[in-house]
Length: 301
Ligand code: TXA
Ligand code: MG
Image 1 (cartoon, helix red, strand yellow):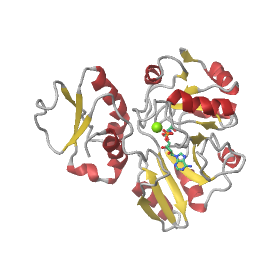
Image 2: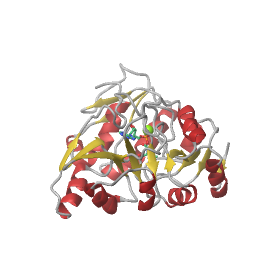
Image 3: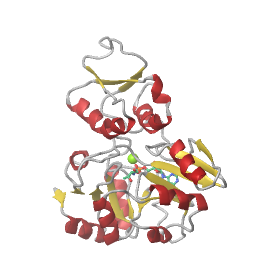
Image 4: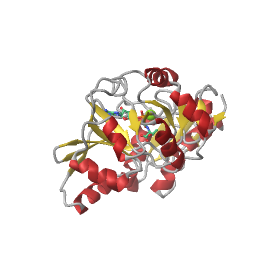
C-alpha cells in the first residue's frame, strides 16, 4: 500500500485498521483505542508480543480522561510544560480501557505528540494507541519511507516528513514524590527536575529499569548487523570485512535526530559491523536517551 492522504487515513482507522502516523519522535503504527480489531492488528503487523504495552496518544488534555483515572499533581505540571512533546506519562488506567493496550497492567502510558498531522488525526479519530512503527526489536522509523520498507508496503502511511527528535519519548511514572524514568529520552532527568522545582515541588527523580517498562528487554532497537560500542578508534578489520562507523554529532539533539536513519543507511551501504565511539562527555544528562538505545542495539555489553 502507498502513502496515504489524510482522509483515507481517518477512514482506515475508523474502520478498524492501522496507519503509520508521523510524530516528532519516531513514526507510530496507530489504531483507535476503541477498536479491538485495530489493536490486534498493531500486534500482528509488528509481530509484537502481547506483554509489551502500547502508548495512547491524545490531542488535548480532555482526552486523557478517556483513558486515565486521574493525573497526579506532578503529571499535570509536566504535561503543561512538555506537551505536546516527547514525554509519556504512566497513569492509573480506567477500567473501560481495552486491557490489550496495557498488557493487563493497571496503568496506561499517555502522551500528546508534537506533530500537526498526528494531532489532527487524533482530533478526527479520538485517542490512538501507537507503538513505534517497526518490527518488534528492530530500529524505529523516522521517515514514512522507513515505515513502508519495514512492512514491505503493506500498511498505509501518512507522510509527515522526517521526525524532528529522532528517538522515542521519555517514559516516566509517579510514586508519591518520586518520578521514575522507565525509558530515558530527549527530555532528560534534569529537564524534569527543573520544571518541577520551578513549580515549587521537590521531586526525587531516578532511572529505574522496571520489569514492566519500556524497551526493558536487553536487546532492542537492533539494526540488521551487529553494533559495537568502543572507547577509542581502533582497527576492526580482524573482526569484520566491512566495518562502518556510526558518527555521532557533537550536539545531542542532532545526534538523536540522525541516529536511526544512520543505522539504516550504514546497513544499506553494506556494513557487516557498525561501531560507535563512546566519549567521556556522553555520560552527561542529555546523552542518556541516545546511549540507552545504542546499548540496547549492541550485542556487546
Ligand atoms: O515516542 C514514542 O514514545 C513512540 C511514538 C510513536 O509515540 N512510541 C513508542 O512506543 O516508542 P513503543 O511501543 O515502541 O514503546 C513504548 C514503551 C514500551 O516499551 C512499553 O513497554 C512502555 O512504553 N509502556 C507503555 N505503556 C506502559 C505501561 N502502562 N507501563 C509501563 N510501560 C509502558
Ligand atoms: Mg518501539
